[in-house]
Image 1 (cartoon, rainbow, N blue to C red):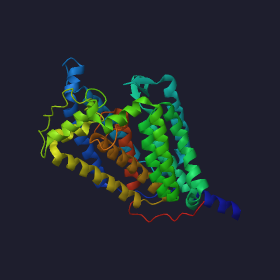
Image 2 (spheres, rainbow, N blue to C red; image 1 turned 180 degrees about the vertical axis):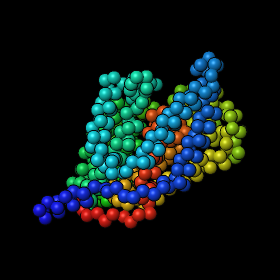
Image 3 (spheres, rainbow, N blue to C red; image 1 turned 60 degrees about the vertical axis):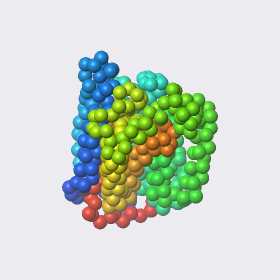
Image 4 (cartoon, rainbow, N blue to C red; image 1 turned 120 degrees about the vertical axis):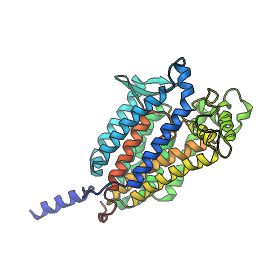
Amino acid sequence: MAAEKALHANENHSRPMPRERESVDYPFLFLVLLLLTVGLAVLYSASYAQSEYDTGYAISTKYLQKQAVCAAIGLVAMYFFSRLPASLWYRLAWIQYGVSIALLLSVLVIGEEVNGAKRWINLAGIQFQPSEIAKFTIIVLFARLTRGFGQKAKQFRYGVVGFAAALLGILIPLALEKHLSAIMLMGMVAVVMMFVAGTNPKWLLAGAGAAVVFLVVYISFMGYAGDRVTAWLHPEQDPGDTGYQILQSLYAIGSGGLFGLGYGKSRQKYLYLPFQYNDYIFAICCEELGMVGALAIVALFSAAILRGYWIALHAPDRFSTVLAAGLTTLIAVQTILNLCVVTNLLPSTGIALPFFSYGGTALAVNLGEMGIVLSISRHRNQRKIQEESL
Protein backbone atom coordinates (compact mmCIF):
# COMPACT_ATOMS: atom_id res chain seq x y z
CA MET A 1 0.00 0.00 0.00
CA ALA A 2 2.79 2.39 0.90
CA ALA A 3 4.58 1.51 -2.34
CA GLU A 4 1.44 2.31 -4.35
CA LYS A 5 1.11 5.70 -2.65
CA ALA A 6 4.77 6.47 -3.35
CA LEU A 7 4.35 5.50 -7.00
CA HIS A 8 1.26 7.66 -7.31
CA ALA A 9 3.12 10.59 -5.74
CA ASN A 10 6.01 10.20 -8.18
CA GLU A 11 3.62 10.11 -11.15
CA ASN A 12 1.97 13.33 -10.02
CA HIS A 13 5.38 14.85 -9.43
CA SER A 14 6.60 14.04 -12.95
CA ARG A 15 4.36 16.55 -14.70
CA PRO A 16 3.60 20.26 -14.18
CA MET A 17 0.88 20.70 -11.59
CA PRO A 18 -1.92 23.26 -11.88
CA ARG A 19 -1.50 26.23 -9.57
CA GLU A 20 -3.79 28.96 -8.30
CA ARG A 21 -4.13 31.60 -10.99
CA GLU A 22 -3.59 35.33 -10.83
CA SER A 23 -4.31 37.89 -13.52
CA VAL A 24 -2.30 37.72 -16.71
CA ASP A 25 0.80 39.87 -17.14
CA TYR A 26 -0.73 43.12 -18.37
CA PRO A 27 2.50 44.70 -19.70
CA PHE A 28 2.99 41.70 -22.01
CA LEU A 29 -0.67 41.74 -23.05
CA PHE A 30 -0.47 45.45 -23.84
CA LEU A 31 2.69 45.01 -25.92
CA VAL A 32 1.16 42.16 -27.95
CA LEU A 33 -2.04 44.12 -28.62
CA LEU A 34 0.00 47.19 -29.57
CA LEU A 35 2.07 45.13 -32.00
CA LEU A 36 -1.12 43.76 -33.54
CA THR A 37 -2.71 47.21 -33.87
CA VAL A 38 0.36 48.83 -35.41
CA GLY A 39 0.81 45.79 -37.65
CA LEU A 40 -2.73 46.04 -39.05
CA ALA A 41 -2.32 49.77 -39.66
CA VAL A 42 0.97 49.23 -41.50
CA LEU A 43 -0.50 46.32 -43.47
CA TYR A 44 -3.35 48.48 -44.75
CA SER A 45 -0.96 51.17 -45.92
CA ALA A 46 1.40 48.65 -47.52
CA SER A 47 -1.31 46.60 -49.23
CA TYR A 48 -4.01 48.94 -50.48
CA ALA A 49 -2.31 49.65 -53.82
CA GLN A 50 -1.89 45.93 -54.47
CA SER A 51 -5.46 45.33 -53.35
CA GLU A 52 -6.84 47.88 -55.79
CA TYR A 53 -4.76 46.43 -58.61
CA ASP A 54 -5.87 42.86 -57.85
CA THR A 55 -9.57 43.81 -57.69
CA GLY A 56 -9.68 46.14 -60.69
CA TYR A 57 -9.63 49.18 -58.37
CA ALA A 58 -12.88 48.06 -56.74
CA ILE A 59 -11.60 47.66 -53.18
CA SER A 60 -8.53 48.79 -51.26
CA THR A 61 -8.95 46.60 -48.18
CA LYS A 62 -8.82 43.09 -49.65
CA TYR A 63 -5.76 42.04 -47.66
CA LEU A 64 -6.68 44.02 -44.53
CA GLN A 65 -10.11 42.37 -44.35
CA LYS A 66 -8.66 38.86 -44.49
CA GLN A 67 -5.98 39.74 -41.97
CA ALA A 68 -8.53 41.33 -39.64
CA VAL A 69 -10.65 38.16 -39.68
CA CYS A 70 -7.61 36.06 -38.79
CA ALA A 71 -6.67 38.59 -36.13
CA ALA A 72 -10.12 38.19 -34.57
CA ILE A 73 -9.74 34.40 -34.63
CA GLY A 74 -6.28 34.78 -33.10
CA LEU A 75 -7.55 37.05 -30.32
CA VAL A 76 -10.24 34.52 -29.43
CA ALA A 77 -7.58 31.81 -29.38
CA MET A 78 -5.31 34.01 -27.27
CA TYR A 79 -8.05 34.57 -24.70
CA PHE A 80 -9.03 30.90 -24.67
CA PHE A 81 -5.46 29.62 -24.35
CA SER A 82 -4.71 32.18 -21.63
CA ARG A 83 -7.33 30.38 -19.51
CA LEU A 84 -5.88 26.90 -20.02
CA PRO A 85 -3.18 25.50 -17.72
CA ALA A 86 0.23 24.81 -19.26
CA SER A 87 -0.03 21.23 -18.04
CA LEU A 88 -2.61 20.58 -20.79
CA TRP A 89 0.05 21.14 -23.46
CA TYR A 90 2.35 18.78 -21.58
CA ARG A 91 -0.22 16.00 -21.91
CA LEU A 92 -1.01 16.76 -25.57
CA ALA A 93 2.60 17.08 -26.77
CA TRP A 94 2.94 13.65 -28.42
CA ILE A 95 -0.56 13.79 -29.92
CA GLN A 96 0.25 17.17 -31.46
CA TYR A 97 3.48 15.77 -32.79
CA GLY A 98 1.72 12.95 -34.63
CA VAL A 99 -0.97 15.26 -36.03
CA SER A 100 1.64 17.77 -37.23
CA ILE A 101 3.63 15.11 -39.08
CA ALA A 102 0.43 13.83 -40.70
CA LEU A 103 -0.51 17.35 -41.82
CA LEU A 104 2.96 18.03 -43.22
CA LEU A 105 2.92 14.79 -45.19
CA SER A 106 -0.59 15.49 -46.47
CA VAL A 107 0.71 18.69 -48.08
CA LEU A 108 2.74 16.53 -50.46
CA VAL A 109 -0.48 14.81 -51.60
CA ILE A 110 -3.30 17.36 -51.41
CA GLY A 111 -1.40 20.60 -50.91
CA GLU A 112 -2.03 23.70 -53.03
CA GLU A 113 0.79 25.47 -54.84
CA VAL A 114 1.11 29.21 -54.24
CA ASN A 115 3.88 31.32 -55.80
CA GLY A 116 5.71 28.19 -56.88
CA ALA A 117 5.68 26.55 -53.42
CA LYS A 118 3.45 23.68 -52.33
CA ARG A 119 2.97 24.34 -48.62
CA TRP A 120 -0.72 25.06 -48.15
CA ILE A 121 -3.80 22.94 -47.47
CA ASN A 122 -7.30 24.09 -48.33
CA LEU A 123 -10.07 22.77 -46.10
CA ALA A 124 -13.62 23.98 -46.76
CA GLY A 125 -12.28 27.14 -48.36
CA ILE A 126 -9.88 27.85 -45.50
CA GLN A 127 -6.23 27.87 -46.54
CA PHE A 128 -3.54 27.29 -43.93
CA GLN A 129 0.09 26.25 -43.63
CA PRO A 130 0.72 23.10 -41.54
CA SER A 131 4.28 24.32 -41.00
CA GLU A 132 2.96 27.08 -38.72
CA ILE A 133 1.36 24.45 -36.50
CA ALA A 134 4.53 22.33 -36.67
CA LYS A 135 6.61 25.21 -35.29
CA PHE A 136 4.39 25.38 -32.24
CA THR A 137 4.36 21.59 -31.89
CA ILE A 138 8.13 21.19 -31.80
CA ILE A 139 8.36 23.86 -29.07
CA VAL A 140 5.78 22.05 -26.92
CA LEU A 141 7.49 18.69 -27.46
CA PHE A 142 10.96 20.06 -26.67
CA ALA A 143 9.57 21.59 -23.46
CA ARG A 144 8.13 18.21 -22.47
CA LEU A 145 11.39 16.40 -23.32
CA THR A 146 13.33 18.97 -21.31
CA ARG A 147 11.17 18.24 -18.29
CA GLY A 148 11.43 14.51 -18.87
CA PHE A 149 15.19 14.40 -19.42
CA GLY A 150 16.01 16.61 -16.44
CA GLN A 151 19.74 16.49 -15.66
CA LYS A 152 20.16 13.72 -18.26
CA ALA A 153 20.01 16.44 -20.93
CA LYS A 154 23.72 16.95 -20.28
CA GLN A 155 24.36 13.49 -21.70
CA PHE A 156 24.81 13.08 -25.45
CA ARG A 157 22.19 10.32 -25.60
CA TYR A 158 19.46 12.61 -24.32
CA GLY A 159 20.63 16.19 -24.89
CA VAL A 160 21.55 15.59 -28.54
CA VAL A 161 20.16 12.31 -29.87
CA GLY A 162 16.86 12.60 -28.00
CA PHE A 163 16.11 16.13 -29.19
CA ALA A 164 17.48 15.56 -32.70
CA ALA A 165 15.33 12.45 -33.25
CA ALA A 166 12.19 14.41 -32.34
CA LEU A 167 13.22 17.34 -34.54
CA LEU A 168 13.91 15.15 -37.58
CA GLY A 169 10.33 13.89 -37.51
CA ILE A 170 9.26 17.43 -38.43
CA LEU A 171 12.23 18.50 -40.57
CA ILE A 172 12.12 15.56 -43.00
CA PRO A 173 8.58 16.36 -44.27
CA LEU A 174 9.58 20.02 -44.50
CA ALA A 175 12.63 19.07 -46.58
CA LEU A 176 10.35 17.12 -48.91
CA GLU A 177 8.28 20.30 -49.27
CA LYS A 178 11.51 22.24 -49.98
CA HIS A 179 10.55 24.56 -47.12
CA LEU A 180 14.05 25.79 -46.30
CA SER A 181 12.92 28.86 -44.33
CA ALA A 182 10.86 26.75 -41.89
CA ILE A 183 13.73 24.27 -41.50
CA MET A 184 16.16 27.07 -40.69
CA LEU A 185 13.74 28.74 -38.28
CA MET A 186 12.93 25.55 -36.37
CA GLY A 187 16.59 24.62 -36.21
CA MET A 188 17.52 27.94 -34.62
CA VAL A 189 14.69 27.77 -32.10
CA ALA A 190 15.61 24.16 -31.30
CA VAL A 191 19.23 25.14 -30.57
CA VAL A 192 18.10 27.81 -28.09
CA MET A 193 15.73 25.39 -26.36
CA MET A 194 18.41 22.68 -26.18
CA PHE A 195 20.77 25.20 -24.58
CA VAL A 196 18.08 26.09 -22.02
CA ALA A 197 17.53 22.36 -21.42
CA GLY A 198 21.20 21.92 -20.51
CA THR A 199 22.69 20.36 -23.66
CA ASN A 200 26.48 20.73 -23.72
CA PRO A 201 27.36 23.86 -25.77
CA LYS A 202 30.17 22.04 -27.61
CA TRP A 203 27.59 19.70 -29.15
CA LEU A 204 25.43 22.65 -30.12
CA LEU A 205 28.40 24.25 -31.87
CA ALA A 206 29.10 20.99 -33.67
CA GLY A 207 25.45 20.85 -34.72
CA ALA A 208 25.66 24.42 -36.00
CA GLY A 209 28.64 23.43 -38.13
CA ALA A 210 26.71 20.48 -39.51
CA ALA A 211 23.79 22.78 -40.29
CA VAL A 212 26.08 25.08 -42.28
CA VAL A 213 27.31 22.10 -44.30
CA PHE A 214 23.70 21.04 -44.90
CA LEU A 215 22.77 24.52 -46.12
CA VAL A 216 25.71 24.60 -48.53
CA VAL A 217 24.76 21.22 -49.95
CA TYR A 218 21.07 22.12 -50.07
CA ILE A 219 21.74 25.38 -51.89
CA SER A 220 24.03 23.60 -54.34
CA PHE A 221 21.22 21.27 -55.37
CA MET A 222 18.35 23.76 -55.18
CA GLY A 223 18.81 26.31 -57.94
CA TYR A 224 16.35 28.88 -56.61
CA ALA A 225 18.12 28.97 -53.23
CA GLY A 226 21.47 29.50 -54.94
CA ASP A 227 19.99 32.40 -56.92
CA ARG A 228 18.92 34.00 -53.65
CA VAL A 229 22.47 33.89 -52.30
CA THR A 230 23.87 35.35 -55.53
CA ALA A 231 21.25 38.11 -55.47
CA TRP A 232 22.11 38.84 -51.84
CA LEU A 233 25.83 39.23 -52.51
CA HIS A 234 25.55 41.11 -55.80
CA PRO A 235 22.00 42.42 -56.39
CA GLU A 236 23.32 45.11 -58.73
CA GLN A 237 24.50 42.49 -61.22
CA ASP A 238 20.92 41.53 -62.09
CA PRO A 239 18.74 44.52 -61.16
CA GLY A 240 15.92 43.45 -63.45
CA ASP A 241 15.50 39.91 -62.09
CA THR A 242 17.11 38.20 -59.09
CA GLY A 243 18.42 41.42 -57.54
CA TYR A 244 15.29 43.46 -58.22
CA GLN A 245 13.44 42.85 -54.94
CA ILE A 246 16.46 43.52 -52.76
CA LEU A 247 17.31 46.75 -54.58
CA GLN A 248 13.72 48.00 -54.37
CA SER A 249 13.70 47.23 -50.65
CA LEU A 250 16.89 49.22 -50.14
CA TYR A 251 15.47 52.09 -52.21
CA ALA A 252 12.41 52.16 -49.94
CA ILE A 253 14.52 52.16 -46.78
CA GLY A 254 16.87 54.84 -48.08
CA SER A 255 14.13 57.15 -49.31
CA GLY A 256 12.50 57.20 -45.88
CA GLY A 257 15.29 59.20 -44.33
CA LEU A 258 15.04 60.17 -40.69
CA PHE A 259 11.30 60.85 -40.34
CA GLY A 260 9.86 59.16 -43.43
CA LEU A 261 7.56 60.29 -46.22
CA GLY A 262 4.50 60.02 -43.98
CA TYR A 263 1.96 57.30 -43.31
CA GLY A 264 0.34 56.12 -46.53
CA LYS A 265 2.81 57.98 -48.76
CA SER A 266 5.14 55.17 -49.78
CA ARG A 267 6.07 55.07 -53.46
CA GLN A 268 7.54 51.56 -53.55
CA LYS A 269 4.24 49.96 -52.58
CA TYR A 270 2.79 50.95 -55.94
CA LEU A 271 3.87 47.61 -57.40
CA TYR A 272 7.57 48.46 -57.45
CA LEU A 273 8.50 46.34 -54.43
CA PRO A 274 7.24 42.73 -54.72
CA PHE A 275 5.53 41.29 -51.60
CA GLN A 276 5.47 44.74 -50.05
CA TYR A 277 2.64 43.63 -47.76
CA ASN A 278 4.30 40.36 -46.75
CA ASP A 279 8.00 39.54 -46.32
CA TYR A 280 9.13 43.08 -47.14
CA ILE A 281 6.57 45.07 -45.19
CA PHE A 282 9.26 46.50 -42.91
CA ALA A 283 10.78 48.29 -45.92
CA ILE A 284 7.46 50.15 -46.31
CA CYS A 285 7.60 51.00 -42.59
CA CYS A 286 11.03 52.54 -43.11
CA GLU A 287 9.90 54.48 -46.18
CA GLU A 288 6.79 55.93 -44.56
CA LEU A 289 7.90 56.29 -40.93
CA GLY A 290 11.63 56.84 -41.41
CA MET A 291 14.42 55.67 -39.19
CA VAL A 292 12.67 57.04 -36.10
CA GLY A 293 9.49 55.06 -36.76
CA ALA A 294 11.42 51.93 -37.72
CA LEU A 295 13.45 52.07 -34.50
CA ALA A 296 10.24 52.55 -32.52
CA ILE A 297 8.84 49.34 -34.05
CA VAL A 298 12.08 47.50 -33.28
CA ALA A 299 11.91 48.80 -29.70
CA LEU A 300 8.31 47.55 -29.43
CA PHE A 301 9.32 44.07 -30.57
CA SER A 302 12.30 44.13 -28.19
CA ALA A 303 10.13 45.09 -25.23
CA ALA A 304 7.63 42.30 -25.96
CA ILE A 305 10.40 39.72 -26.40
CA LEU A 306 12.20 40.74 -23.21
CA ARG A 307 8.93 40.64 -21.28
CA GLY A 308 8.26 37.17 -22.66
CA TYR A 309 11.62 35.97 -21.37
CA TRP A 310 10.89 37.62 -18.02
CA ILE A 311 7.68 35.59 -17.81
CA ALA A 312 9.63 32.43 -18.68
CA LEU A 313 12.14 33.08 -15.90
CA HIS A 314 9.32 33.56 -13.39
CA ALA A 315 7.32 30.48 -14.43
CA PRO A 316 6.51 28.02 -11.62
CA ASP A 317 7.99 24.86 -13.18
CA ARG A 318 10.58 23.69 -15.70
CA PHE A 319 8.10 22.79 -18.43
CA SER A 320 6.40 26.20 -18.28
CA THR A 321 9.75 27.99 -18.27
CA VAL A 322 11.01 26.22 -21.38
CA LEU A 323 7.64 26.48 -23.14
CA ALA A 324 7.41 30.26 -22.61
CA ALA A 325 11.07 30.69 -23.58
CA GLY A 326 10.56 28.66 -26.75
CA LEU A 327 7.48 30.59 -27.85
CA THR A 328 9.22 33.90 -27.18
CA THR A 329 12.32 32.72 -29.05
CA LEU A 330 10.16 31.84 -32.06
CA ILE A 331 8.94 35.45 -32.28
CA ALA A 332 12.45 36.78 -31.67
CA VAL A 333 14.13 34.66 -34.36
CA GLN A 334 11.43 35.42 -36.93
CA THR A 335 11.74 39.14 -36.23
CA ILE A 336 15.54 39.20 -36.43
CA LEU A 337 15.68 37.13 -39.63
CA ASN A 338 13.02 39.23 -41.35
CA LEU A 339 14.70 42.53 -40.48
CA CYS A 340 18.07 41.19 -41.64
CA VAL A 341 16.59 40.08 -44.98
CA VAL A 342 14.81 43.38 -45.62
CA THR A 343 18.03 45.31 -44.96
CA ASN A 344 20.06 42.77 -47.03
CA LEU A 345 22.14 41.57 -44.11
CA LEU A 346 20.98 38.04 -44.98
CA PRO A 347 19.75 36.41 -48.21
CA SER A 348 16.00 36.14 -48.70
CA THR A 349 14.52 33.44 -46.46
CA GLY A 350 10.77 33.85 -46.93
CA ILE A 351 10.27 34.41 -43.20
CA ALA A 352 7.54 36.94 -42.38
CA LEU A 353 7.52 39.67 -39.74
CA PRO A 354 5.27 38.53 -36.84
CA PHE A 355 2.04 40.54 -36.38
CA PHE A 356 2.84 42.71 -39.43
CA SER A 357 3.22 40.55 -42.54
CA TYR A 358 0.13 39.34 -44.37
CA GLY A 359 -0.61 35.72 -43.53
CA GLY A 360 -3.68 34.53 -41.68
CA THR A 361 -2.39 31.21 -40.36
CA ALA A 362 0.79 32.74 -38.97
CA LEU A 363 -1.06 35.62 -37.29
CA ALA A 364 -3.71 33.42 -35.67
CA VAL A 365 -1.11 30.91 -34.46
CA ASN A 366 1.18 33.66 -33.12
CA LEU A 367 -1.65 35.20 -31.13
CA GLY A 368 -2.66 31.80 -29.79
CA GLU A 369 0.93 31.18 -28.71
CA MET A 370 1.00 34.51 -26.92
CA GLY A 371 -2.11 33.35 -25.08
CA ILE A 372 -0.12 30.39 -23.74
CA VAL A 373 2.61 32.77 -22.53
CA LEU A 374 -0.11 34.82 -20.82
CA SER A 375 -1.44 31.65 -19.19
CA ILE A 376 2.02 30.90 -17.82
CA SER A 377 2.29 34.51 -16.60
CA ARG A 378 -0.65 33.93 -14.24
CA HIS A 379 1.72 32.03 -11.93
CA ARG A 380 4.64 34.48 -12.11
CA ASN A 381 4.57 35.35 -8.41
CA GLN A 382 4.31 31.81 -7.12
CA ARG A 383 7.11 29.76 -5.66
CA LYS A 384 8.83 27.50 -8.17
CA ILE A 385 8.09 23.79 -7.95
CA GLN A 386 11.14 21.84 -6.87
CA GLU A 387 11.44 19.07 -9.42
CA GLU A 388 13.53 15.95 -9.19
CA SER A 389 15.55 14.54 -12.08
CA LEU A 390 13.77 11.69 -13.83
